[in-house]
Image (spheres, rainbow, N blue to C red):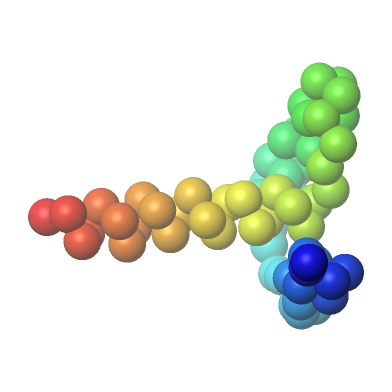
Length: 64
């Protein structure tokens, strides 16, 4: 049976530098999800964005 430690992946903390425009875009995404009653946080949005970019860049280049 899995323990609590195996269910939660280890997370690391990082600093992100972005322009005001990028911050505005992030805030708009965050607000949109809140309005849709989709529980989220800005960290989750970053993680989702990284995974989508990885799929686009790596998966696409591997299939060519």
